[in-house]
Length: 338
Image 1 (tube, rainbow, N blue to C red):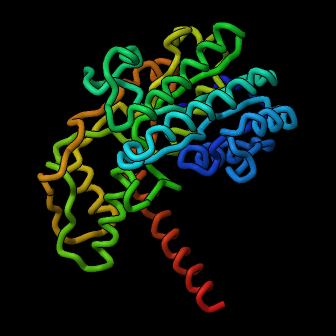
Image 2: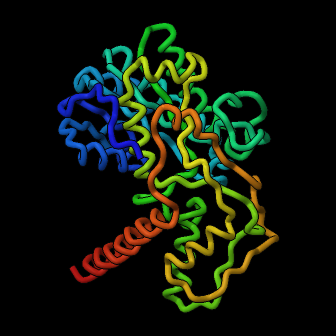
Image 3: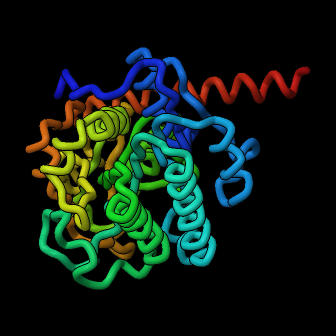
């Protein structure tokens, strides 16, 4: 783990974190606060609708942030992407355009855009290097979302080329951790598995059924590591960043560079949760892509590697999950009796 940044930011600088309540945004806020940054700007969706051009313009004119971290956007699973494709492409592109353009209009020193590894084509050599962007067709199920994230990268690059700004992009692999989405229909593989194993344990079930063959491979990064990587990239001096990237290929993959089968993941999850039954696989359900791994060599050369191993990250997440469940039960009981 990198312990020292090439620091270019002052602890009193105004930093606007768009999307502060989400999985990544909340981890970035925790990290910034832990490192002593005292002038963080956050707004809820009710306080600032980032799709409203006039509202975003007024916000930047008043607040004048020094740095912007753009982690906001409309997200969801396969069902949501297929059901609301127009909302996914429109809202994400408008959010990116509004924030990036107003950052330029108000002389923001530096901006960091957070994307997704879904930007890469469906059928490319693994692990996926940054260079494979736009070389083939995207995965159809989330193409509108992926196109919007690619647009965010290209907005940053285009403003850099035309206006001399310093806007940077990072593309994380599959993330998990504190504040993850545990919605039963829209959650991703780790929160879905964790919830299933937990429910099976408390209900004394004999088995947990996992979709697919268990042989598909995925890469996972603990969200606090993603926050560390984000701050690392944001704080790099301009020469270090530019010497490691290209003007029209400037995005940086963030991950572990290590993948694991869903079967292995399920076994670790069973141990973390403390479930004592069996694991069964429903092979009638799809595996999805058999492998999805990003190449992290660019970021490693720049000086950052992940620090949280999967089992440790899962234990931290599960501890938080259990405490959150108990707290929600307490709140519900208070509402009933008050």
